[in-house]
Image (spheres, rainbow, N blue to C red):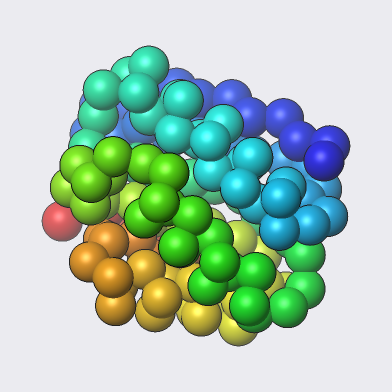
Length: 124
């Protein structure tokens, strides 16, 4: 895993930026912990994760496993978070699958390929 994460508080949400390469399901899990650490530091409920320069592993089953990882490894309060994730168009199918898996399990995590669409959804 070769990833860099930065964050900054905006007026209405926390902006987390991720850049780099995730190569495996384990990298996805580690990445989720890195993002969660940023969320905990800032104690916010609205988060925009901007990662069009992050490369993700192929295979939809890893993303279902990722959602199960949330369930088994994070406190139930993460269901109160409202998260908009922006990926590149290349990962639109994977992001859509991940979004469906999240929503079906009670998370308010949505995927976008447009920063503006993600921003508008998050603040409205």
